[in-house]
Image (cartoon, rainbow, N blue to C red; front, side):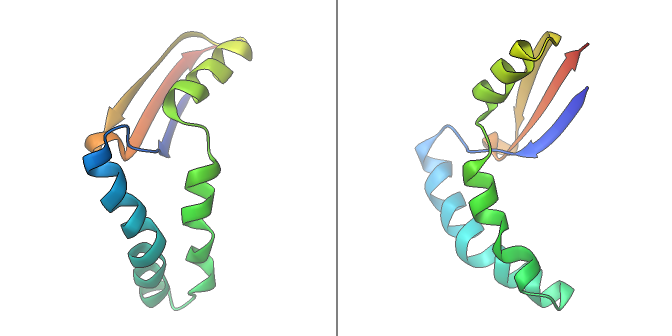
Length: 85
């Protein structure tokens, strides 16, 4: 299985600006481009509630996946998780 997801950056230098961007910029830009602002208002909260990279990897192991690994991309803004069942 492969999961590519937005994640919470582990470094403070990236985490602060990213939180600002995801809360204020992303919903507005997404709404302007799509014409449906409500469609992007959930995204920042959804990203915050989603398990962090380490937690998701542990949940995958607990669900019976083997060879579980993840790689942070784009400074930790995105994580790619891999596992075998």
